[in-house]
Amino acid sequence: MQPMVRKRDSLVALVAAGAFLAIAGCEEPVYPVPTESYSSIGGFEITRVGDPDPGPYSVGDAEGDPDWGFWFPYSIAVDSEGDLLVTNIRGGYLERFIPDPDGGAVWDAYWIWPRGRQEATYQLFIESYPDSTYPQGVVLVSESQSEMGLVFELGRQVHKLALPDPILDDSDDRLPRNAKITQADILTGYPTTFQPGPVVYYPPDRIVYTDVELSYLFHIEGDSVTAEGGGEGDQEGKFYRPLGICVTPDETIVVSDTYNHRLQKFTLEPAPTDPEDPDYDPLYFYPFIFRYQGTIGEFGFNNGQLSSPFGMDTDAEGNIYVCDTRNARVQKFSQDGELLAVIYGSGYWRLRCPLDLAVTEEGDLWVVDAFIWYESWEDEYVPEDQARIILFRQD
Image (cartoon, rainbow, N blue to C red):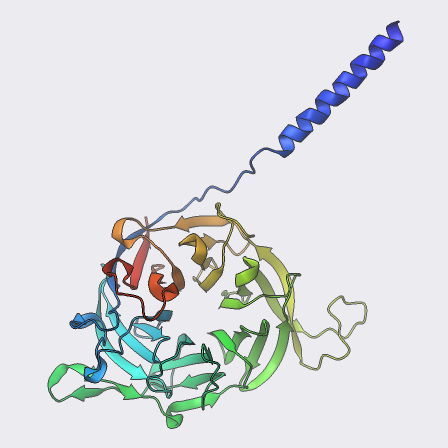
């Protein structure tokens, strides 16, 4: 009988071990704990369409027309003077705000994109960088397809331009009038793609941007395409509507793979000529390729996970900040993917729908919180739904 006892004991032990493994496998995963924290210092609101008193912060009733206000902020950049450039995707404005350290700002000027005022929404992504030829630097504007399916005269391209000087209004020498951007202001029109998305510049004269609809990634040097990659899919190196991009100081290219709920990292490398190289393609004819280097994040709601990441930026140390849009927060990662901070804000300045952000030289964050971007154009105005721009600072 002794062997039977041993056999039964072994069976019980095996079942117990299996049960332990099953229970262990059902344990909640451990999510990273942020080591840094940020607080919302303050912010300023964006005037809603039809507001009879736009105040000093936005154009509001531009040229006396109450139907055109700066209500749909979308993309933000810090210019060479430290001022904020913000695009409006309903109507085609580009506005400049002079910020203060407490999160407020004074409206300074606005420009009308060549479309003029259109009853349509079309994405305007912006990037600003210094240029010795132009005292105020230059900007890159990427214009995508409108919601009405229109193809505009200068649309579906990334444009490099020097902003024309605003004209002072004779009736009020404090506020400049608008200046309409014309073809003459455009210094370069980069190669046309189907629906160009976010764009970023890095020296000496290179830009990288996505095609949102086709899920492609392009590298431009001078005015020529030097690398192409991506395509729609959920495999490594593929995208599904990439709506954010940044380049770290060591020239790692990071893309918000928005509907795949992740960030992907790439380096720009010479196109391989060895058929044994997994990235070798005999039909590829550009001099460089985007070499996949890794992924940060996955779909979810916990720390380190993402839900529809949009705009992003990097700081001087190469840390990556991303608008975790559907999770109503910003997350900060090291370049290696370590979670450093989860940023929500608090009180009135708590994030609701962050779309884009810009990191200042001091490491502060300006975040476009465009909650009402998801509301229809005809919805009744609710003050609590005011779009705004919020300043965050590390504690």
